[in-house]
Image (cartoon, rainbow, N blue to C red; front, side):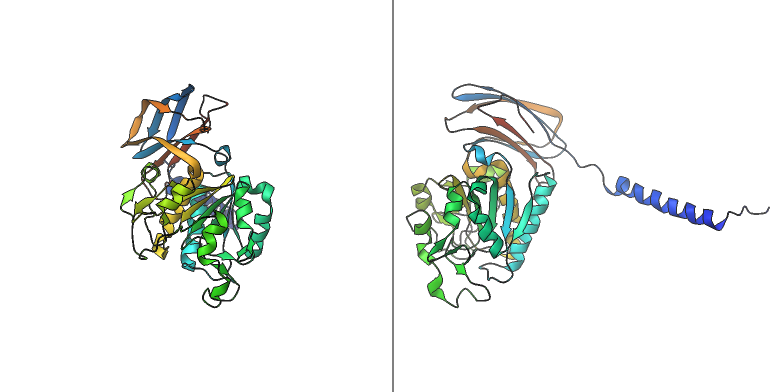
Length: 362
């Protein structure tokens, strides 16, 4: 039998079509649909209590936290800026600083976070801190335990007025505000230029602020908030002292020991400084990034934990009725559900504004 022969141009065309079809099928084979957590929530609001009908559907082990947020500016998503400048020294590992940015950006992307996440250098940081009207819509991450001298020093402080206007500052690594870094010079080259122990006085007017523990001292007891949102950073090397938190109306978010907290939030004017002020090693970057995202996205800088639940699996859907005590300062309920993976690849959130609606919104 004579074999069938096709023109060369037809053979090339069919080959190309075959490749295109094969490539178009790759996502179907390589990318299975991601599991989802679904939240149904309706609240009946009274003057001092919310009755919440909560429904959860999830194929995985799922943690659910119900928080009462006390500041409306913490409910809406913010633009996120992370300071990193290769020309300036850091008090922590550069690999850890870059890793924190990468993990924060990717974790927020997994959650379909609607705002941008950007890296800024020392000059960009100066510009951001001078744009005071935009402060309530922005979050700033300082991952290297050092402010650059463009914004902070013995006689310069652009950070404080920005936070006071509503900025949300995440500080990672070493004692808060201790150093003012200059380009191309080590942190030890001119010790007289650093605010050092004056730093808490420059921001809150009192001290001492930080513990002087071993770099490897770890918190042994999880706070209520750490349990609710699975916060994992435990180092107490320069942890925030509990008496300082009490004096400045701060909140323990992380782990405690030796009279200090591994993660803490302190109000300053209309904004907040959230501190991871122990040592940050390269192996801490994933935990720190995870915790930053959890606090940022939950409004946790000023919130109360109302309820915590864990479901081994919620399929078919599970429901529960919750009676939640409210306080006059509460402005929103946030229902926050996430899986047991440190990247929280499966996640859901619902917001109930206490003053405007009784129904949950995405």
